[in-house]
Image (cartoon, rainbow, N blue to C red; front, top):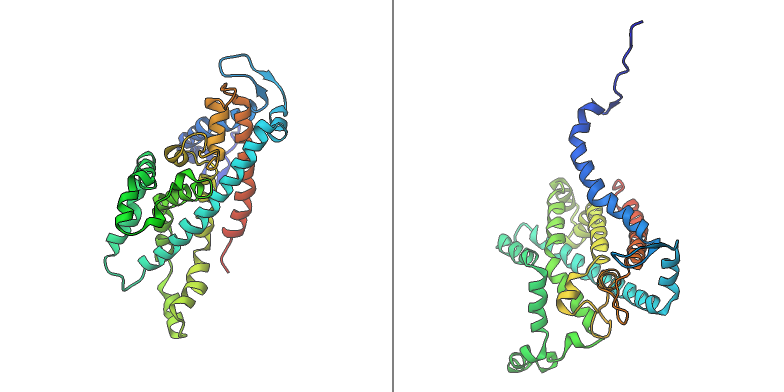
Length: 310
């Protein structure tokens, strides 16, 4: 009896055997460095015990303690509120000014366009530890006070990073200053991709620049705005380095700049005061809750902004 071989299923314009070798390296990289660590973190959140010691399965006890034990719940609520505020500042200042700068940079009559693009994007190329330390010196009245007083700007001489009211705002604005170049360049690319036919039609109808921006440019770059908002949301809820560079891992002063990233570092890696012993299970629980929060924010934003523009 002749053996009949089944044909490989066709996907698109080729077969699985055609495109699978090209997909395999990226798939292996994704599983090893992203999917497996995520699943391992979910598994670790169900256990308790220090690194290098026997771990005991506790189920959802870490999550219960995270929201009920004052040692963890107060710090987590504080860090979550600060992280959300940190995100709102970036969404309004970084992305808002990014759209404004991108609109100016794509103007036909702008001179020195390349210079302005370089100035806006230059901070992105600097190390966050370097910029954080430099801004820490600039905001220190001991260092900048004499210079500001010579300029008769005495009202700016104050411990900005030592005041609970202004510390988180200053850290957020420094982060906005450093990373504003990325959304600006993405908005520039999106605006340059708009067909000139829209602008010609608007010019014939007598639309002014403000009307062109609100009724043509903004709706057409809606998918890009949504994607940048998602990237901002994800990056801000994982922020750690800017606070570590300008304040410390404890979110000084008195946890006023404490973010979820710094809380996770203290609990899961360095060990939180007064115990000082790392609790990887509790740290994994914090990371798991953060992952769920990101899903709740990212999925609706994708559905709202990545649809077809009407």
